[in-house]
View 1 (cartoon, helix red, strand yellow):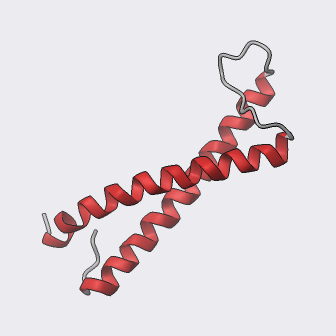
View 2 (tube, rainbow, N blue to C red):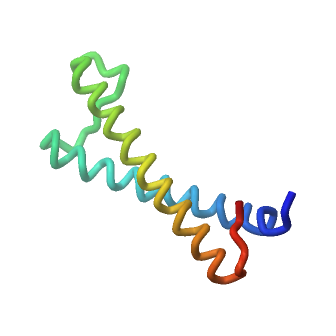
View 3 (cartoon, rainbow, N blue to C red):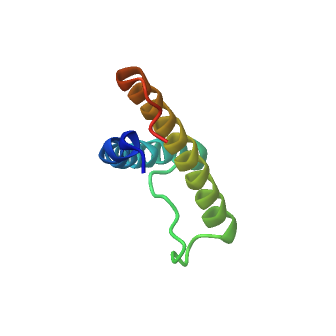
Length: 88
């Protein structure tokens, strides 16, 4: 395993936690705009329709994937700028 990958591991973990928090906040705001309500549908909520639950899950997954990828990529670029080595 390359030394840069080992050094980057804790940085990547911290960025992963941060990106999860950002994605969660972004999803809640997006759901408020789309659903016009604060309560996010839960899969086991009997009062919600299949459509609400599945649209909510798809939106959450898409937002999480985009935010995580953007943060991971930015972290790798920042690491390369600081060290001159790509972490992967």
